[in-house]
Amino acid sequence: MVGIVSYGAYVPRYRLARKTISAAMSWFSGGGGPGEKAVANHDEDAVTMAVAAGIDCLTGLKRETLEALYLATVSAPYKDRQDAGIVAAALDLNPDIRTADFTDSPKAGTAALIAGCDAVKAGSARSVIVCAADCRVAKPGSFEEGNYGDGAAAFVLGDSHVIASLGGSYSVTRDFMDRWRAEDERFAHGSEDRWIRDEGYTKFIAQAMAGLLKKYGLSAKDFAKVVYPCLYVREHAAIGKSLGFKPEQVQQEQLTTVGDSGVAHPLMMLVAALEDAKPGDKILVASYGNGSDAVFFEVTDHIAGAGQRRGMKKHLAMKKDLPSYERYLAIRNVLPTEKGLRGETGPTQVTLMWRDRKVILALYGSKCKRCGTPQYPDQRICVNPDCGAVDQMEEYRFADKMARLFSYTSDSLAFSVSPPEMYGVIDFEGGGRYLLDITDAEAESLKIDMGVEMTFRRRYTDEAHGILGYFWKAKPAAG
Image (tube, rainbow, N blue to C red; front, side, top):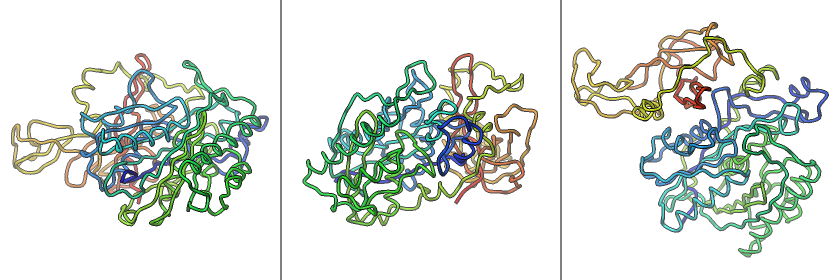
């Protein structure tokens, strides 16, 4: 039996109400509409969100059993460096793991999911993790700006302890230019909106789902939930109705809570469906983008033992409203911001990054074999004054350890898109202390001894060499 073994999701902390956009851009038609959208912080991107969803997905699982990682995104931070490799390093997966990037279409997420299932079915990989994430930038005042939201989903696929077994898939491919972006362009172009709605969403998704039903001899009544994205509320309902699905079978869209999260969009909705699924439920999920992929799963008895994770429900509950549209533009780096001398970064030492890759990307320190004292970064000599052992260290991962804030400061002189810049001395549970940046928090909310957790983020941008410096930061612990 091949299928989903575990699932996870990530929704950024910040939300931007669409009325905030329309108030600032009232002469444009793109920003209005009900609800809000999720906005990645200034130190987040598709890679960091994929890591966050991956961590959520790997709760209670052994990472060393994974044999492949597929990353799907159309907003990859790098064009000539494998982003999946960064995610694998941050998740501390085996160095001999297979990695691949799926990109260039919003349906790349379902393509990666199907490819992962095929790999397990063929026996070329016993366990695959698929991460899908997008953090797209839209032109101010555009239709896309109001709809684009940020987020990520992740699934571990395997052939044992499956919580949702693969039933089958069906794909439709069309070279349909609804939205596109060339190599050197930052913002996407779009065709006429009504044409996209009528020729794209309404036809392609329905064709893929109808093709799947026919291929496997199924009907609408066989499914507990059907999951598919659509930017148009009436058409979203009409697609399901045209295929015989009742309103209660159609998974609620996330446009008013997260927005259109690109490749992650249908997969985040699939996570939401799995959170409420029962054994025996069949779930059909379809994507959109240059056609559509449709795939269905049947929930097994193992769903009861899937374990606790944040998923969609807890992440949606943990939110903070962005106070202004201008703040949003600064976070997105659409609004040019003067950094000053304090904001400049020096040249990145690429060879050092390679030598210390586990220390930097996976937050590895060392632990004394003699007395058990952990320390970061790794050292040859034990810092315990009662021990002092030399060359008696073993590797020790801090990324998954909870911690406490020993002391902190806020710096209004250092450059920050979201001032003030905050730093804290962190005491890890089980031992170990280090000074880290603090993110996703306000200075007035920090307190001595408060719980914090590690989060993988952008630490700096070396603009002269086109290098994004990733590292771990501390953020307030969440339930």
